[in-house]
Image 1: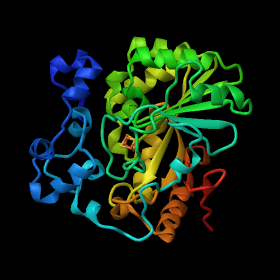
Image 2 (image 1 turned 30 degrees about the vertical axis):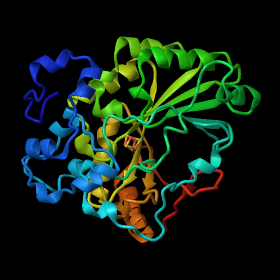
Image 3 (image 1 turned 90 degrees about the vertical axis):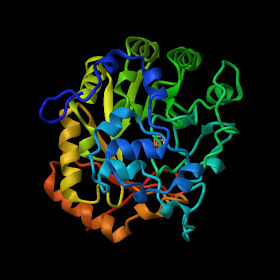
Length: 340
Ligand code: SF4
């Protein structure tokens, strides 16, 4: 990992460290991160980090500008008193996940595809997360052969795609991922495996040869969807991991969330699209914030979203323009937001 001047930002010993060690070494308390970032503690709120745990990888933290309390990466992970406010229209289950779970940990909303919540663990905790109140202890999927989830997949022959999610599915060990893939391989009509992960960008050391072996054991196509909101989240360090996946023949897409104070400008989003493309990643979705309790301070009005997106459309060629969408509980697809 280097900064823009090409200077190494990683401690030499960290370069070969096991990804699990790097998870253990991540920032788990607010004061340590603020100290590292040289930021005054008054910008944060400890009580919020008790309600939704705090975690940031050292790599992500290294991309935060020192001494800048408004850094767009810091704002994504910084607990603030705003999270404690109850705001009308913001709910614990913002997108109706729990209403669409025929068996624990299997969410079936859209035709042809289901999503598995494999773990509640993540490498960083994003303060706007739409699953910040998700009951993971009751809704983690059992993926053993003949488990209720695998039986559901086997019986519903119109399902051809399985999305691995969480939490972050890459927090699972390679052994467990290989077991899951083995279970899915037994179901003939599952042709696509989609992996939604923030580790791809915030802990690129996760892309190991044994990880590649686990995913490549899937009989069909594997697609990766990264979650990157700001161009500063892409550096030479994670570009190498994306390149590795791309050279392995995998397609990479990105979804971002439109966040007040973080990426609410057409210029920032345009630069994000160019950097994603340069990193072999196709911009895919730009989500309007899901209205989850505790995240209202990241919200932008519909008109603000449309204004930003209209300007973005004027900046970018069509193939770099993500689709602006929102998710509404009970709908059969994401809802496209149309701008005049
Ligand atoms: S990585 Fe994803 S699931 Fe985890 S906290 Fe961030 S948005 Fe939520």
